[in-house]
Structure formats: C-alpha cells, structure tokens
Amino acid sequence: MEEMEIRSWLTLDAIRKTKGAEVVETVGNLQTGHTKSVFVVIEDDYLELVYSDAASNTVRRFDDRDELDEAVEERRSENGEENFSDNGDQDYDKDEDEEDDEDLEDGFSVEDESESY
Image (cartoon, rainbow, N blue to C red; front, side, top):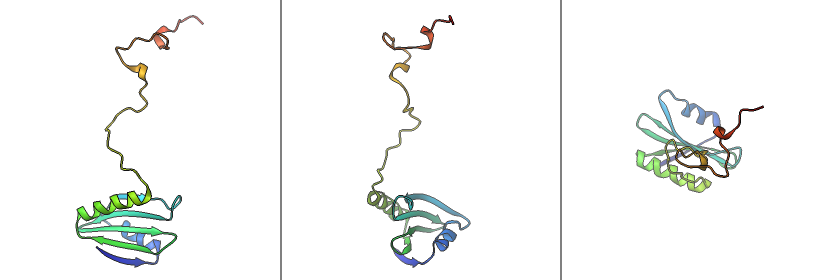
C-alpha cells in the first residue's frame, strides 16, 4: 500500500469524479464523525480517498482488489459500522397476521368489517 497526503478536498473530489472511476464503497460520515473513506477503482488502480476534518487527507493505493476489500472491512470496524448480511428482498414489515393460512381469532381483518355505515 502506498499513501500520499492531500491538502484539499477538491483534489480528492477530482480523483473520485475521474471519468471511468467506480465508487465501490463509502465508509464514515463527516457530519457525524471526523473521517470519511471513499473506495474507488480507476482502471487498474484501487484507491481509498480519506476525507478528514481532524487530520490530514490522504490517498491510499492498494495492490489489488483483495487488499482494497480488507481495507473496507477495517474501516467499517473502526467506524463501528456493522456488516449486515444480505437478506434479499425480505419484507421486514410483514405482520404475523399476514400469513395466508393463519386464522385470526382476536385480531382484525378487512374481511370482518361490516359494510353498514
């Protein structure tokens, strides 16, 4: 890994917005913390752009994608961001009484409403 200090956020933004740049991951938040790392792939270069309001800004270059992925996990753990497993399109708002074969005894369902007003 190579590291270079950058004085301006504008320089980091210019690197991030380079034509062909793919932002892989963003870890951290400058509104709630002191650093934000943006992981970028530009052709064969794997970069971490570190924005900081408390220390120097840096660009880190990694040798390969595996090294970049390790750095992403390291930054997540440093920032206290949990690595959530992917549950696909699971409906987290699904109520227990939405089961098709479940009978409602004490619950309420639209079919039980009387149509008298």
